[in-house]
Length: 72
Image 1 (tube, one colour):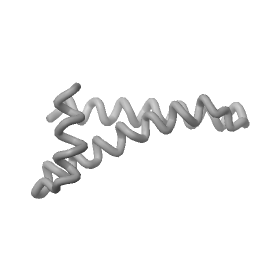
Image 2: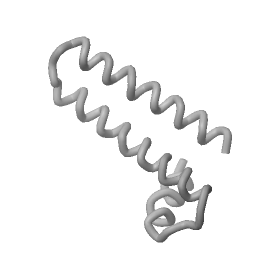
Image 3: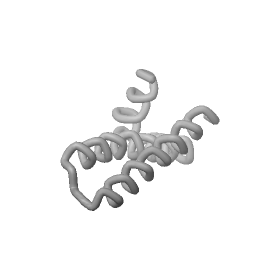
Image 4: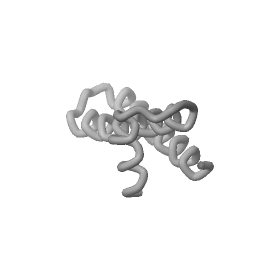
């Protein structure tokens, strides 16, 4: 589990850096927004996995989280 937490922290740092860069450029470049949205997917999966560990799994959790982390 500690490895997953480290990944979560690193993903969030990357997302923050990407958002800061986009704001500093002052433009809404579609490529920058696309990359940020790709990171959002991983953050959402990570949050679902944390919820799974805290309480009983739901069907949605099994479908998305477990399969996702097995691939990693």
